[in-house]
Image (tube, rainbow, N blue to C red; front, side):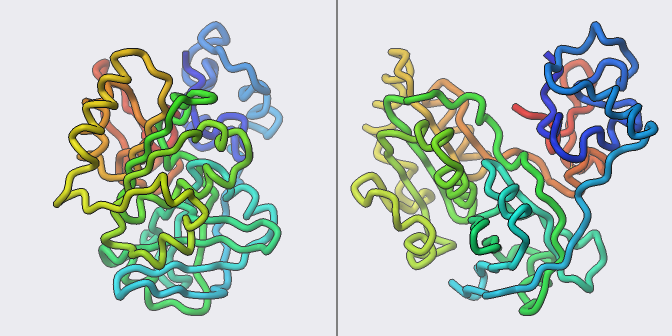
Length: 310
Ligand code: FES
């Protein structure tokens, strides 16, 4: 099935990939015919024709004022930005992320940052940023305003794997990779009901307890275990074995690994199933243009991770 573009049918579709003959959904906009298309939304080819065969530009950069900077450590800040209600509503979507840079910096300083929290009623979005290179170091100096482009939606892979009314939900999370969880909790019953009977193992080494309590203090304390993954392991060996046994017996569990690919691979191997996980690849443009996030599949096709919904 071809209809696997995260942005299909969203504002901004048809995009630059349609214009270049690389639409991930529409047969006619990728050198084929309607027979190659199984998209059930509004016809993307018709939209493209109606827009006089031009892409629809929707994600323009905007300068947002910084309402507050929460300094949790020398290398980890949360920026709280003022934004309009519509933008905040879009930002309160599972897997939402934006590109951020200092307003005076060149465009290629834009850094992909998961939306940590969005408050449409207050007109605020929260972005947690760890200092890790020239892009983040530039942002750390800003106190007045930041340039923001978005909202993009493919920060998480595997959301379609989540089962309704899971028997158990097991979450492994490390550092600021934890950020997208807030949107899953705040995004209404659609995801909340998939996070039932929660067991959570979290490594807060780089973000700290104050941050965890500020943003995830509403999680039931009995369900959360704080650990240092590198020193103590993801969870007890018994627990990992128990997860594996449950998977073998076909238990309907939901597993989220909000950590690096190293930990994702370890958990998926044990559980024998796909987890919800950060989308791999370096996001640079988010539009399917720059190639930073791409790889070639077994047939030699270029796969754009920023656009492919998996
Ligand atoms: S981030 Fe540029 S092509 Fe995916």
